[in-house]
Image 1 (tube, one colour):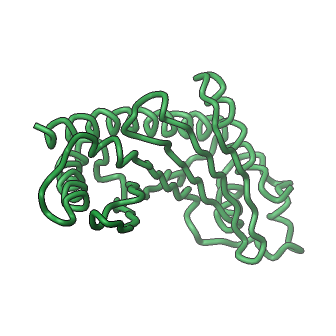
Image 2 (cartoon, one colour):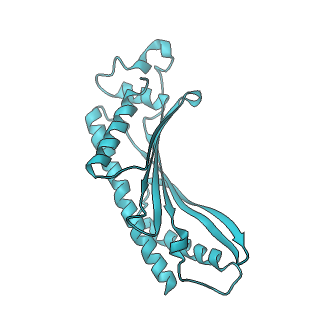
Image 3 (cartoon, rainbow, N blue to C red):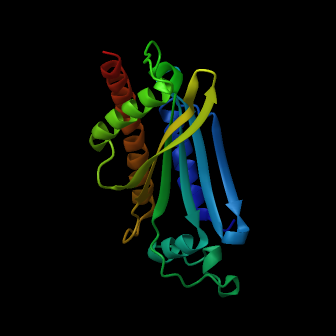
Length: 217
C-alpha cells in the first residue's frame, strides 16, 4: 500500500459517518497512477432532510507528493513505502494539505415551485434571482477558509422557454496539515473538519429555504 497515511484518513472518515448514523450513497476511493493521485469521493442523500437539496458530494484529493511530505513530517514513519529511495518519491517540497471539494446539488423544481412570471424565460429569471439571494447569504456559511465557490448550472428549453435542469453550488478549500507531527492529532483534526462541513451543510439547507420563501413572497 503506497498511501498508508491517506488510508488512515479514509478509515477515520468512514468511522465518523458510522458514529453519526450517516449512510453514504457512494463511498469511492480512486487511484490514478498516471498523475500520482488518490482521493475519496462520498455522496450523502439529503432529500429526506430537505426538499430543497438532493445531495451533497464531498471529494478529498491527495497525491504521492503530499503523502511523502506528510510521512517525513510525522514521527515513526521511517518504513513508509514511499520513503524508500527506489520509489523516487523520497523528496517533496509540496505542503501536505488536503484539497477538498464540496458540491451541494439543489432541487431547482422545488425551489421555484408555485412561482411564475409572465416573461418568456421566467423560470431562468427566477432561478437567477434565487442564486443572487443565496450569494448574499453564503458568507455566513463559507468564510475566508473556503478558497472559492461557484455555481454550476445546466440550461434546457421547452415550449415555455428556457429553464435550469440542474443547479449546484461548488466550494473548494484545503485542510492545512503542515507542521503537525502526531497522526492521531491529525485524524482528530480531520474529524472536526468533516463535522464542520456537515454543520455548514445544515446552514445551506436553512438559507436555501429562507431565500426561496422570500422569493415567493
